[in-house]
Amino acid sequence: MKSVITFKLGAIVISALLLAAVAHAGVIWDGSASKGTSVFGNLNCDSPGTVTAVNDSTFGRVWRFDKPAGDKRCEAHGAARFHAAIGGTYYIGWRSRLTTTADDNANFQWKAFGRPLLQNFPLVLKNLHGMWMLGYSPDGNLRPIFQTKASAGVWHSHVLLIHVSDNAKAGYVEYWLDGKHVTFTNGSTRFMARTFDGTSVDPKWGVYGGTSVHMQNFVTSLKIGTTFADVAP
Image 1: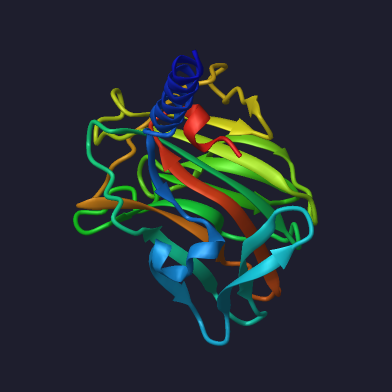
Image 2: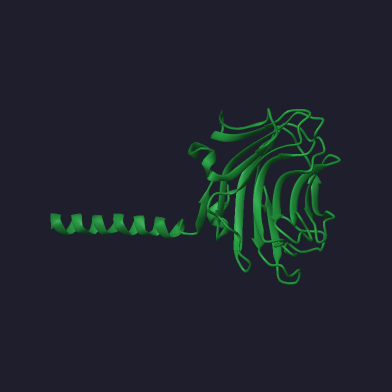
């Protein structure tokens, strides 16, 4: 009887491990600050700006993007070994805490590279006139598709769903802010958009713009996956 019970317990443990593996099978990339900056494609920081892992009292090791006044940017460009493909559908999740609500160009970019650049930056999250804005650029000119009041010194969670396409009628984006599925200016939780430009598109986190202001963006729980549950902070 003892051997039978042991076998059953072993089977339960194996089943639980298999279920856990399946549950996380959709995680494509984990940008944990405990893994070092090699988790990013590269860093784009004007000197003396820095990207460092620091301790946060709530979330432990987090990324600190520190852009001094007078500098234009301090960002991480791309997720190592992740290459967004046309036709792919990706969930991108993270938490962020900004030290100021001063106007900037971007705290997050879905940035295009290569030629031709018809859009340059298909999607951007930024501060503008005291508002937190998700902007869409169909032609190089950024248009707000979602806005809410910005706040400094507060942790917020973000999940972006991006279906990648160079056709504005086929690509789309959805956005969850602090767990809430937001409604865009089109009255829907899905915004049809051209989400691929040039020869490649990459995520970028940090601070871009706000040149005259010292800005810091603390970022954690960075993940890219194939389901909301894979990446939701």
